[in-house]
Image (cartoon, rainbow, N blue to C red; front, side, top):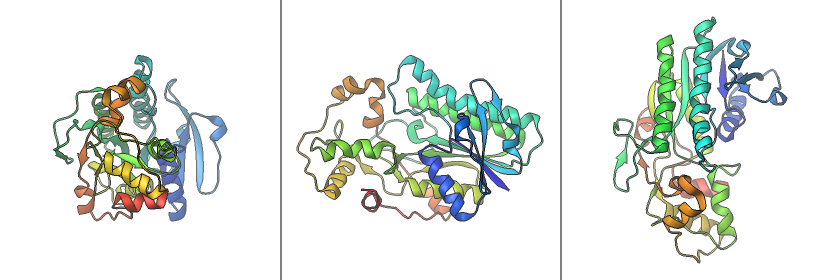
Amino acid sequence: MSYLITGATGLVGTAIVKLCKVQGIPIHYLTTNRDKIKNSEFCKGFYWNPVTGEIDDAAFEKVSTIIHLAGATVAKRWTNVYKNEIIESRVNSAKLLHDTLSRIEHQVTHFISASAIGIYPNSDTKLYTEETQKFAKDFLGNVVTAWEQSADHFETLGIDVAKLRIGLVLSDSGGALPQMIAPIKKYIGAAFGSGEQWQSWIHVNDLAELFLFLAKNKLVGIYNGVAPNPVTQNKLIRTSAELLKKPLILPNIPKFMARLLLGEMYVLLTSSQRVSAEKVLSQGFFYEYDSVEKALKELL
């Protein structure tokens, strides 16, 4: 049986596909770009368009598990139009998958959806577990709540659902890390705000392993996709600078300046969520990169 992956060409999806190839797991993937449809013995591509409702039903043939990663990046200025795209890209893509499975014969038994720790409220003191019931009321909190509700809808089809709340993904291929270290290399690196906000991070390779761990063990429910040892942003910046052998000369960047530069999305850099990895650890998951020093040494 195969895994069907949406968002397979993104940062996390690419890592999962690479890992599946190493482990001999056949892959189907959905793409909105027909030019990216390439087929091999291991990997087969299929067209879909969640905006127009188009999808190739053949994508679901001999598929047991769907790993749903598709969604517009939040690392882009949040205009009102783009905020709608952020939500709709997640909800509409899940709806298209759900509606398709409801009308075709299939063998899908497990739906694993990406989610985000942005669902947790901003706090410098709380430790968030999967049992947390109080959710953020800001834009990101609303996005993740709608995202998870769209995943839960698959239970109406008798399909088991798992949701992985992902933290700050560390990778040298994209995401936040290259943008974070670029100023450091130019001697203008600095943390935002107090710098004491918690950054619950995870190495991209561990995150790919974690998605497959959920799939292989047929786990259901909510899991935090973070490493066991969150750090403050000050420590993250300092450790990066030390490994790059660059001094940190400038003071931290005030919140008001971050808001002027980035608009509403400044909360991505100033919000604080200290998130527990205890649940996946208790299930037997092993982190190759359990400290930020080890992760950054491999990436920088």
